Image 1 (cartoon, rainbow, N blue to C red):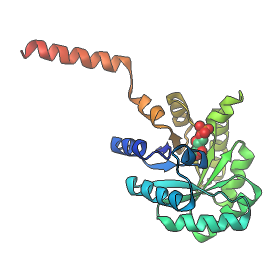
Image 2: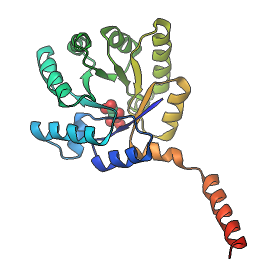
Image 3: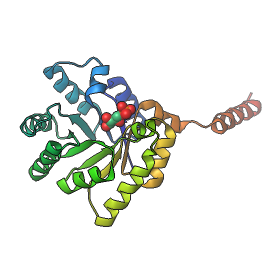
Length: 218
Ligand code: E4P
C-alpha cells in the first residue's frame, strides 16, 4: 500500500518524507490556493519544489475543462519533472484526455470519482490512478468505503492495472479501512498519517520501561 500526502505545504511534505514512509504527493487547486501559490510561473515552480523533496509520484491538476486545454496543460505539467502525474477531472473531456495521455505514455490521476461507473470508464481510458473521494461521500451520509470496495471488486474482476488512490481521507480509521479493502494508495493530510503512530498503551508502556531502567541505573 502506497502512502501519499495530500497537501501543497512544503514543510508538511518534508516532515512526512523524513518519516521514511512517503511514496508521493497529491495536490489540487484548493490546496495550492491554501498555501498562497498563485500565478502560472509560481504554480509550476511549486510543483518542481515538491518533486525535489519527494522521490515519488506528484499529482498536478489541470485547470482547463476543454479537451485541447487539458492536453496543452497536461503536456506542460508532464514536462516539468519525471515524477509528475497529470490530474484530470472526471468529465467526458477528461476521459478523452486520459485516453490521449495513456497513448503518449503520460501518467494520469482521474480525480473527483464518486461512483463505480466513473471508475470503470477511467480504467478503460487507461488512467494510472483514480481518486475516489471517501470523506466527501461520508459528508453526505454515504459510506465512502463501500465505493472503494466496489471499485476494488470491479478492477480485480477484469485485472485493470489502474490503481485505486483513496482520496479525501480525513482520519486514521479511513486509512485502516482502505488497507482492509485493498486500496492501492491512500492520500491523507499529515495529521491523519501521524495519528497512526499513536496509542496510549505505547506511551504508558514506554514510560514504565524508562522508569524501571532509571530505578536500576542510578
Ligand atoms: C486529493 O487528490 C483530493 O483532491 C483531496 O483528497 C480532496 O480532499 P478533501 O475532500 O478533504 O478536500
